[in-house]
Image 1 (cartoon, rainbow, N blue to C red):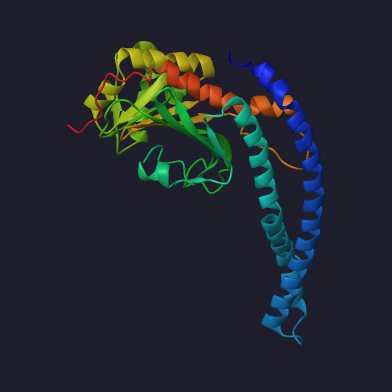
Image 2 (image 1 turned 90 degrees about the horizontal axis):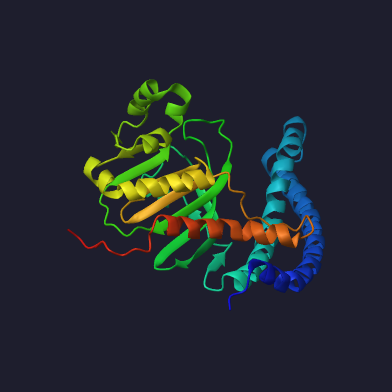
Length: 317
C-alpha cells in the first residue's frame, strides 16, 4: 500500500532533525570560510596593487584600487569558499526527500543545464541568458522528463533586465515533429483587444508564422507561432487545445510551451524554486512541500496532455 504524503513527511522528520544539527555545524564552518575569504582577498588586493604601482607609488591610485576593488575580490573569494557548502547541503536535503517520496527519480543540485539547450532549438529565443539548476530527472509512465529551476533574463537587448526564476521542463512528446511550434499566453489580446492584439502579434516574431486556430476560447488565451502551419495543427488537435486550456485554468496563464524536434519544452513562471540554505533553520513541512510541488505539477501536466498515449509513430517519414 502506497504511503500518503503526510506519512512520508512524518517518516523524514527524524532525518530532518539530524540535518538541522548538521546545518548548524556547516553554518559555523561557513563563518570561518568567510573570515578566511576576507584575509585572502585583502592580501591578494594588496599584493596586486604593490606589483602594479610599486611600493613607492602606493598612494592615491593604489589606495583607490584597494578601496573599490577590495570588496568585490573579497566577495568573490568568499562565494567560491562558501557556495560549495550550500550546494552540498541542498543536495543532502533534497536526497532525503526524494528517496522517501520519489525513489525512482534522480535529483542533482550539482548538475546544471546551460542555455544552449533552449538556444539551440530556438525555443523562446528572446529569453537571453538561461541557466537550469536543481535538476530532477525521471519518468512518469512512459514519458521521460527533466525539470529544473530556471534562471533567465527578460531579453537580450534589455540591459536592465533582472534575473527571474521559474520552472523549466523538458518532456518527451509522442508525435514526430520536424519544425517548431510555440504556444504562449496571449498577453497582447488581453491588453489591447483582439484586433490590435493580432496586429502586434504579427510583428512580434518575424521568423515564425502566426497560426490562427478555430477554437475561440483557445485563441483568447494563447498565441501560437510556428515554422509550419500544417504541423502546428497536427500538434494542436481539438483535444490538445482543450487540455492546454485545462492546465491554464488549473495553473493560470503562466505556462509557455515549445514543441520542437520530438520534445516539449516548457517554462512555468512564478513557481517558487526549491532552495535550502545554511543560514536559516530547516522548516520540514515548508521544504518538503516546496520540493514536491513542481514534481507533482509536471506529473499532472503529463497526465493532462495524455503524453503517455503511444498511438503515433515517431519514426522518420
